[in-house]
Amino acid sequence: MMGRSEQEIARTGWIGNRYLVLGLLLLVYIFNFADRMLLGVMATPIKAELHLTDVQLGLIGGTAFALLYATLGVPIGWLADRRSRSWIITAALCIWSGFTALCGFATGFVTLFLARLGVGIGEAGGVAPSYSMIADYFGPGERARALGVFSFGIPIGGAIGLAFGGVIATTFDWRTAFIAMGIAGLLVAPFFRLLVRDPVRGGAEQGSIGERPKLAAAIRIIARKPAFWLISFGSALGSTASYGISFWIPSFYVRSFDMPLSQVTLLYAAIILSGGIAGIWLGAWLGDRIGPRRPGAYLAIPMFALLVSIPFFGLAVLAESPMMSMGLLFIPTMLGSMGYGTVLAAVQNVVPASLRSTASALFLFINNLIGLGVGSAVLGFISDRLAQQYGAQSLRYALLSGATFYLAAAIFYLMASRRVAKDWEA
Image (cartoon, rainbow, N blue to C red; front, side, top):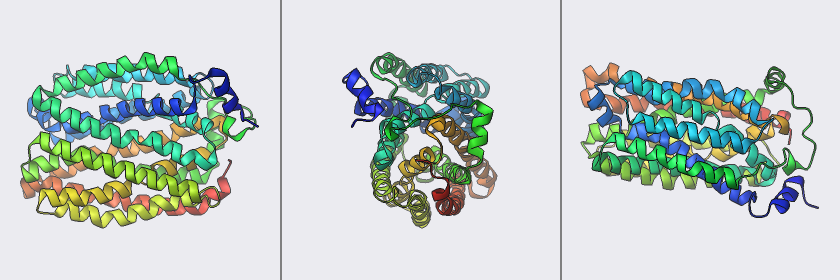
């Protein structure tokens, strides 16, 4: 017998088919991450033209984006549990793409900071409703892989942002890259709205979603789930390292190895794309294979992966040859990606189906306020403080310090793995 989401697919035909929806959600997420990566790619020419410090670049790259992205995400997620998620995602894509284009007209720190605030406002409405839609289209035994496929948007979008930004910035200038990326997102928005249909809420479980509480009541329900908080803070600590490292890596190779920006962006894009996809799929496959029987595996997988990645990352940053450094960097990139699908699946499964968008938004609030808001700024601050002693090599040691956040994340995942079965809903 078909579940309600499958019945809905049968009525709508190929429009609303869950694989088409997953593909289009992935496409939007690719734009989401490509927009984020552009600033890190072009940090060197932006810094030179606008006369910025590393701290200012870090604030623009993380804090400016995270302030409204994190703050607005929770009420938007709560709204997505009641209204059309496809409309919310479409509006979000238009807003963040428009502000991405406006970044190309910045004249200094303040105007670029404000434009990135706008990007954050838009992207606040894109991800949490997507998680919820995917969880309603795909059941527990395939949810980690579906969310893993969606998470391919991180390496694919990151690689496109790196390669596209590097080529455009070298061929034209950094302003053209922002404007072109923003216009492309605006062109995709109407097609997304035309083709994507909301699934029945809770349809993958073929059960009633129950009452849809008000925002304060919804947060109280989620607050009684210790596993949710352990997962969220573990992910936030991991993101502090990953966001900060990915933002500063292009500048690191330019400064420490005197490599041209166009070469750095293409090579690093290849690492992010290949390592990210391999890691996400391996982790998601393991999660769906083991997790439905042993929920703790959803968190044990990223815990072990992060612990193993730390020494390889240290060797990559300390390597004296740029090619050896990039070769070693593939390993922590792959290992650090293994938790994307499993962590998201665990978040969807520890809350009722009626609260998935709200819980996802709260998860993203914590993850991005700490990870995205702090990561690039902290590493930029450390780099500035070490510049007098180490000169151009200061960024190398700032990146090394970022790996300590991976260790802290692994500890939180360990605690979450021991608790998650008690809080399981699905």
